[in-house]
Length: 271
Ligand SMILES: Nc1ncnc2c1ncn2[C@@H]1O[C@H](COP(=O)(O)OP(=O)(O)O)[C@@H](O)[C@H]1O
Ligand SMILES: [Mg+2]
Image (tube, rainbow, N blue to C red; front, side, top):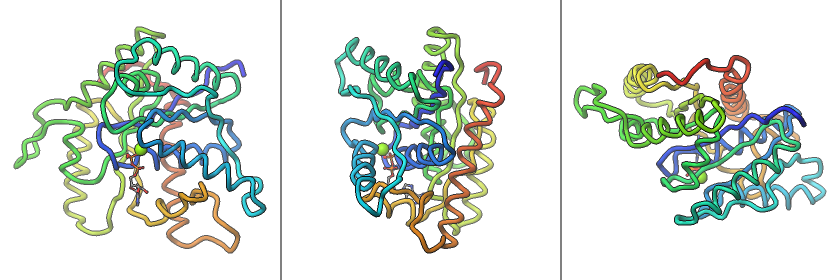
């Protein structure tokens, strides 16, 4: 494959916000669209993506799981941890180079803590996707807000880190990082709170320089197929429930939002 793969990185500084869930569903969604997909798990401690793919591989070897598509993974994955300096950098570059040979898309999942490998992973993003739980508490991931008025007081450490990786990326290959923020686990309750968060997010997106994705609802279905490494995108025979249909639409919408940047590359990183 001669063209460079499109790199999609899932990141934020909080654990449990849906990075791995969104990364896996995006990977499987692209596979089902007939794309060649590679996956790199930089969350070495939790290893959610690695474990999920092991389950999926095991299940694909059974009668019931026959035909299940699998993404590629690097033969020597980065090992993670602090203090590995150059070795880590090279391992990640080698993993990307290996997958680039036959993948149109590379998905990178990152840990919920800031470390060298995670930062490095961010710097490779063509699109960075940041899922966040739908609450004012989680908005501080993106910016410091006045607790009463919700006025924006300045960027957060994570936004500053993304800004830094945008510079690193520009230096490395003059590329730019398109940033998408998605709200996760949206509830059907508390419409007022939801609207208020949406208003602040709109303002933030202009100020900090990200695009907003529609996001995922709070759905049991996003959790339940882990053991067999399935996702709601590939349901068993017998039809789809309403909740599955809605969830599939959400995953498709996320992929569409990500790929908008691929169809029309952003001209600059200016925020
Ligand atoms: N939209 C959702 N609805 C229901 N559960 C979700 C949703 N998104 C994530 N989860 C669950 O929340 C937990 C944390 O998600 P995960 O993707 O592992 O987060 P992260 O990778 O950011 O730490 C997991 O148990 C996952 O199944
Ligand atoms: Mg994770």
